[in-house]
Length: 238
Image 1: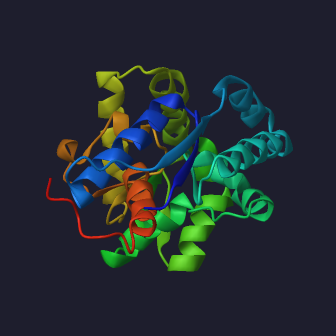
Image 2: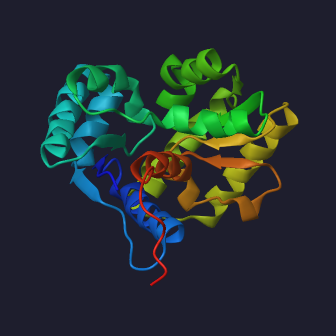
């Protein structure tokens, strides 16, 4: 099994989901007492969140590159950036590293493509929904049209992520608000909706709606294990 590197802490709430999902999926695939081989470096999100909202993406890049280099030095053979928004600087990370970065948008779009989805809704931070780095990658590389909510709904999703989910607060009213936005995207023609923020699945899951949801966190973990476990011996029968 290859060692998966995790650059997390953005927020630690969703990074904990990565750790759990990777280990649960490894046990499911290999059985017995198998668990994932991981190297995790977790960053302090507060200064990074400030830089995000100040537009200091060069400063963010420097911090993430330094963290990713630590993960690689610890023995990781691939890197997962445990956040959708920070993939805005994925090209700079890829250029700085000798190990491959598994892009979260690619992992998500590959499943969309396999399911025959040609038009999908996207929920995430305002950076992810409004800027081109995520939507354009899905549209150009996978020929899938990406729909985002209107501006007032984008503002509300962003608020729920930063003021509630990143701080560990699960608010029932916010669940209803997100589900209403999911329904609006479906009514606008989306065949499914990407949970394009690693915290959103803490609040809404498939059981809450008939609209097909694509949890980017889960799909990112599955894609990593597809590479990490490839060529491993027969699963344990212990």
